Image 1 (cartoon, rainbow, N blue to C red):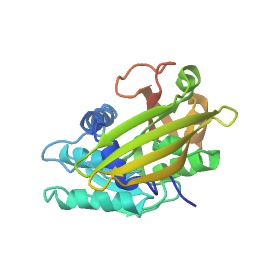
Image 2 (tube, rainbow, N blue to C red; image 1 turned 135 degrees about the vertical axis):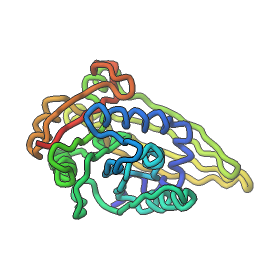
Image 3 (cartoon, helix red, strand yellow; image 1 turned 120 degrees about the horizontal axis):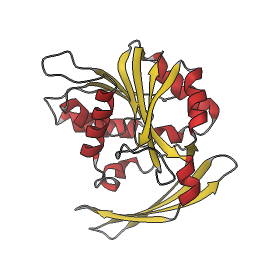
Length: 260
């Protein structure tokens, strides 16, 4: 079965070249610090497990900010790109593993687990989400924290998803991505059909990629129930980046859960 990003992963960094990874990583670091996980000069670096690390863009910045990070992603192509990234950064160490966020296990516990860029929303069934929280809980030290972001149901149902077109290019290719969403309100899902056109700038040859991504949107009561079942409790929730109280304007919301 083709999984999200199986076909488009080689264009991932180009498609998101304008994403503010620096600002997001700094925000996550501040979120961790507010909950007692702080990187201090001269001290042992706090340990982080990142579920869905992708190409390592957030991890690179967090490593520079003093965190010791282990990454996990189900896409080997993404991990290959992450390894190429860190091979060029001799001063930084990053360990990464291929694995599923719902079932990955390593014989180590961490000060914090993070999962960014809506990885939580790719967990589309209650069984998926339960496994996701259990993975986080299994790798947290007692009192450790799990920080993640997701699509927030009240905002999704108020704003409603719309078709979006993105165009990017580099010296070799031009990429046009069309995202056409379908709201599956009885399942708390949005199915996004991606059509990606890739043009070789030297030859003019155009390739086409099609993928479907199912994204789950959440409400606080279900997050509380599913987190509690994994031995976690909600310590904080806020609008992604702004730190405001979540509202119908908050498509992205960050949660922090603490291990009992």
